[in-house]
Length: 365
Image (cartoon, rainbow, N blue to C red; front, side):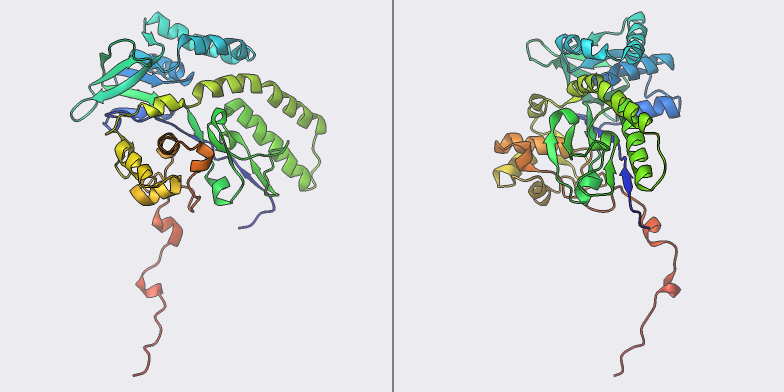
């Protein structure tokens, strides 16, 4: 199939900063827990620790309580001051702020401890998670153990920019937008004419602004196709998008990865789950000369598993940048490769049997 215009809305995937035991059964991402709660009406466990950063912590914790589960504690990497600084910007969207306040009231009603400025040190258990060790991020107090049967964790979002990389678009690293992004115009048309990039796949903006961007791009394509569109509607959409950026920027700031958190990953911690690549192997590869993320892949197989680096890529890039002393721009990003998502081989080749394979006549002797 070919098309004169293409709108790419690939969304985002969550970032989990690795820690000891994060591969244990019973540990899952905040986004996965959200899907479980909303789509399956199920809770991840009966006694759950919710950890990471950002407003999704409150959303998931409140959802677990609403479905009959117990939240042992919310472990928030952000200190109280981060939330206090963000409050004026969050108040620019009163309906969304009220929704968040509702989540917090539900947690307060159950007396759920909210541990500001804390991080996970490890998840403990034999066959599944049985407890988590948490400690203040500044290291000024002793760690504590929280007994649980499930851990839900998420440290922000990373744009799903695989299509941009595959098509060779110029990209730059923008920490506030979640990672690697590409510049687009007023209607979200990229540097490649006819290609529009919208939503969190083009940089973390949130659901509301993603929907507005999609509508603006859709109307722009309709106009190019010769359809009549309401110009005033387009102007209103652009205005709403501009107004929403203060709230969006505040949330994005809270979700942005802190290099210090990644620097604190322990020596023997698994970073790439698919290929079982550990922190010390990445450091050794950098010391041996792998100063580019694709060189790291060649040295260690990091990023070569089924997820194609979506789970480990952002953290691995940061580790290379920290070890080498280079910036994220110099370290680069994974080279785009098709397919953009893992697919079944049968979906690519269709159905056939050996009788369908053309066999040439044997060469004469």
